[in-house]
Length: 134
Length: 239
Figure (cartoon, chains in turn purple, brown):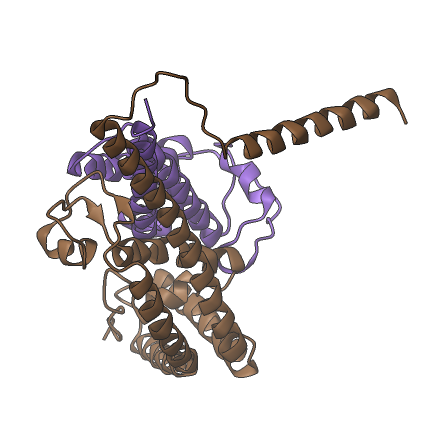
């Protein structure tokens, strides 16, 4: 059972199959928010991963962080940040959602592909600026 | 006209004038008398910069193409599949059954009665049949999309053939280089070809578009049908 305290909240409406209403995002940063709908919480995890992928992709491309170190760094940060979020900050019971592995792989491949696109785009942009006339 | 509005209009007018002047002035190149001719090195740098600018434009274009093709695919699927009553009925049935089955599996224990286990097996069988029917309904759109995309990919491949569309900050694994360095000249394996970037864009953008539009299948239904990392859950696991 989860060790966190939970306040009872009226059920929040959610759009079908993955899109989230604005009211859901207002719960995201509250550690005492109640997540009655499992799909809603998993959608939040999914979109958080996409945001992390875009942010890290742009930063990695601009730095630039070359080689597989960058890819490994992304995987660790992506998994680690979300793990800290749902385990330490929200203190949810991972077993309710199928375990830590289910939460870790939620949206991971899509975020990895998005990261690759962002890193290629930002790295190419950075290379263009580097080649600007003297 | 209120004074603030006059100032704003004047600022907009000046801005437009400057922009127009800048665009017009960029046509001319001013050189000072006695200036030296460009060295071959600088010519090479400027040539390379032009190539990189084209590469950057190609990168953005491919992302845009990927968004458009994802929307096109979903549009075709909506016309042929999503709006039909049969699909809506089957989808609702599959989602209802998946959620019911999941809840039942969570509450049942190993020592549950034989009748309950048989009931779950029957429900799993029914769900499998509905999933199969749903896949058959989607098959129509898959053929149409496959046909359209074969034509589109042929066109894009010929447009971007031999062009380096992006630079990768790493060297891909050897078996991926066949895709990332496809039809490119030279040995620089950090050069990225159209098809590799397009595949990455499609993998990321299409699923996100499906989620935003609310067209992605539910997790319970995906789990029962079999996900990316594993086969469908075994039926009759309590027998």
